[in-house]
Length: 304
Image 1 (tube, rainbow, N blue to C red):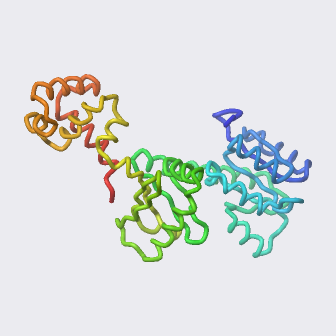
Image 2 (cartoon, one colour):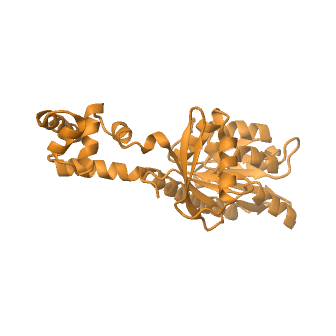
Image 3 (cartoon, one colour):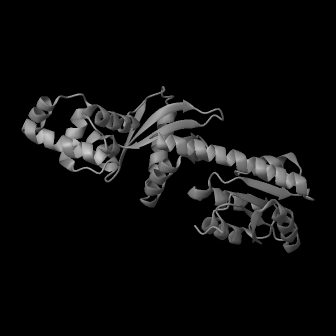
């Protein structure tokens, strides 16, 4: 992605009228917003994918590809699924408004555009979008790879890490198979904490049912089964060797040095040497502090 500035809000305005785009640019410039413009749906899709704007202003009525289809195309791009889209239109009938929300629109502005109202709505939706993004990032940092599944439209949103899994499955042509499996599972009304296993020749995942969101979406935690192995997790998260990971894992389970030596078929002296290296690499002074680091890390992979 190539952004003009990391300190200013980037707005993509899409309208087949150059005059309308010029007006929007003049309105947003004093508000210190960078305006990108597109004259049709295809151009909007290309710019949005490359630049990933913070918010999109979209004319509903355009030739060739109208705003509604353009909105659907934009929302199909994983990196833009949570980007707010405000429709700008002269349409005010209920059917058009409902259709706009159905395709993923966030808000409606009726033309002619009122400058103060436009800026106020943009700022409101930017604030809400950042709050949602921060919440999703917080879930990621807590090890919660969460996605929301809408029974009619598939994945309605996901945390960034869960999005990576979805993208990997999509590239491997396995996403539709996973979604079909989840939809079948959800029809059985699983209880919170219930698990569904999805396997293919190369992928193996566990889906854990969290419950319903306020909007009625099914919340699901998606975990790569490889990440459920404690030793693998410790190796991924700390600069240690495989043998040190073995010692680290049993240390986190509360085993004494003598027990670790018996389990791993090594001498207590060798265990002590591995622990000395662990303490140095982890920048801790004793086994209690080291065990605490391991336990905090491993809590992230515990299934509900």
